[in-house]
Image (cartoon, rainbow, N blue to C red; front, side):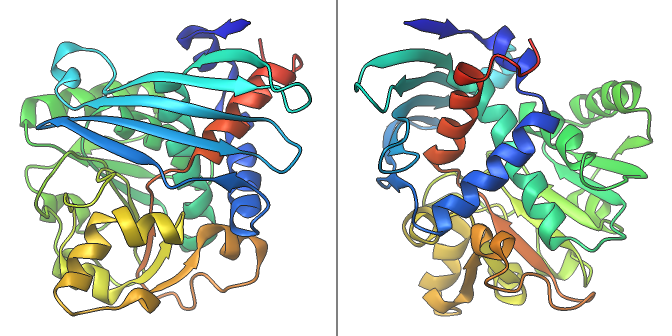
Length: 317
């Protein structure tokens, strides 16, 4: 059995490689060509989760599972919040053939998926990015969004002004474009064309009143029912698109909170992103529309990325 460690994943699964892989996987998912169960999430204690995500890329295609822990306090320890394994099985024999570092795959494919959604839903002239959060996903999203839009500036907000400033300085040096920190969420998003919410917030940190018409948002930080990064007003005002309709109906914190308040119903999810990518449902309809991509992540994104690393030796090595 082959082992692909974190260093190899980081080296070979570049955004140029991962973005088209994830795009194709999301289209296949929404066409019903893949097989997967709704992921199981076990709450271990406050801020700590264990998830099990099984699936198959098709009827006679590679299959496997992701076993993942989420420990939010790991950021302060200098290690990834997501730790785990992706296990691949051969489609012909059912033999387990590869184990891969799930934390690094998750970090890259999540940002790649947001980049795919941004490319499909953000205005073509979107140039200003706001990142709410300064953890690992903030860095991966800055890198990935820059692959689909010609960014001219990035603003970051986080609960610690010192850490936000440190992040801004590091990313400016890496990306070669202006990156600044903001002292408040409202300030961070005031001029944004694209907003990514990437926090462990339990209660909303972003209000709909603060978001300009025409903005696109990727809601990423809340990965299960309960925590919500944005308020009900923003959900109601937006054209709301899911990575997985079933996933959001069961585990999409922001959507479920607005639904419980009686402000929306299930029809408020106008499409899965795979349907938009396939051209069967329209995404953005006007320059003034606020679009939301709710990211929970589904295992087909992980399996497609993992299988490419395992089966394609011509990927960057």
